View (cartoon, one colour):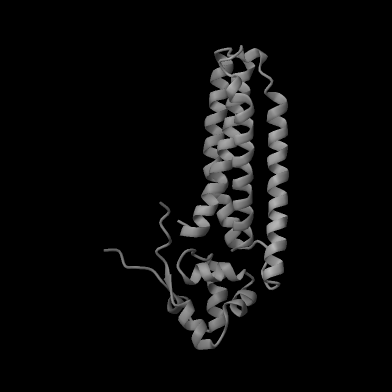
Length: 72
Length: 144
């Protein structure tokens, strides 16, 4: 079975705090709404470029928006 | 549902129907007469072309239905669709390679054209199905 990405993110919380819809954010970074949903749900890791674009929309640093688990 | 996912489902269903029709025409003849006498080339050509046409028609029809129910729906591919498409192609290519190796071995063994052509067809068919299946699974379950 496909293992989804281990990269977690706070994009949904950031988006809701900013009062933006998924369609707003998707349009501003040039992806479809389905792709933004997949990113928010952790089903797709965005490219580094897209991750920076998303952080720029919310005005946060990349490690405020994306999280990777520590090695155990 | 994403535009790329709709197209992947359409191609998967069209490929499955195309392969099933071809097998339903050709497979029953195996064993009942010499393979050299079985007409496989025209059924193969027509089912491949029919599968392509069905896939395109289904994508267009599905797109029109989606547009009618939700005029805001997007009908474009983005970076995620491209990534998923590449992954599907990589999986499909493995089956294509197996099919081509089988073709080479059959040629070396001087087997009948029927078996060689059908091994190549099987390689292409499994490659197409594996490609589409991988895409629909990844759209649903997430990118590995």
